[in-house]
Amino acid sequence: MKVVNITFKFADGSPDQMHPAVEGESILDVALNNDIKLQHNCGGVCGCSTCHVYIEAGMDDLPEISDKEEDYIDRAIDPRINSRLGCQCVVQGNEDVVVTIPPQDFLGH
Image 1 (cartoon, helix red, strand yellow):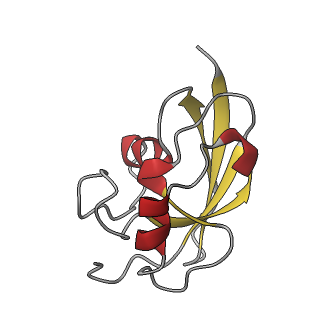
Image 2: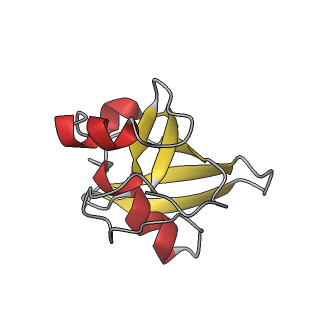
């Protein structure tokens, strides 16, 4: 199995964290497995926008965004060109990924 690193940066100013990710794991999985607070109201099935993140590097190692994911990102707080849903970002194991987690102090939708 291929392994890459995911570096998590935090909009709230918390220190960066780097964790290994095995090919096939999502950014949401890696965050939750390492006690990183990333909301996921739908349980990680692309049914909401609460696991919204910004991909700062490594976008080429993630699957292309689907129409469904794009629709949910449009509902997220402060969507940007590099916005993705953590549950849909499954690493392919070729390139390290850098992610910024926006503020998590909301109820979500």
